[in-house]
Amino acid sequence: MTKRIVLSSDHAAIDLRQAIAAHITVKGWEAVDIGPTTKESTHYPIHGKAAAEMVAAGDCDLGIIVCGTGQGIMMAANKVAGIRCGVCSDTFSAEMIRAHNNANMLALGARVLGEGLALEVVDAFLEAEFEGGRHATRVDMIED
Ligand code: RB5
Image 1 (spheres, rainbow, N blue to C red):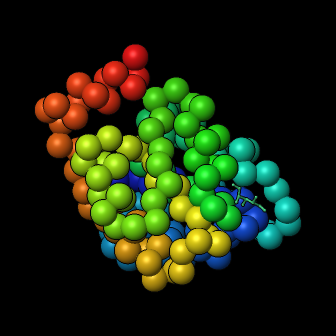
Image 2: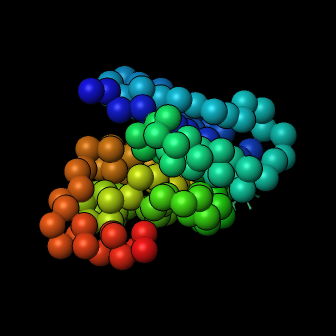
């Protein structure tokens, strides 16, 4: 079944977020882009929380959130119960946070990564699968 991917960002990352939405749509994922749409200054915790709540509620399977560094919006998302979000700037980490940590959200820094690498990081995250087994024990410990 097609996975629904929620996307949000702050003002620093609108262009990259929209590029990711277009890219993942072409790849066959369902992009649920919740904005914002203008570059007016805003606050990343609002947008990280909004996306995280959609994942936590089961409205979307996974989330991709973007701010200048990825760090602030990741911190906000991880405050929502059930969210496991990491900032990745390389494809290995993006694959591993799914395979080993069962991350359900990916955070990216629009001022850190060029668009080409960012899209490869997104692909690595979305195409990876959680391996379960000993990793499930550890993820359960995080949730506890
Ligand atoms: C906004 O200027 C910037 O602080 C924000 O996008 C992000 O980098 C915070 O973590």
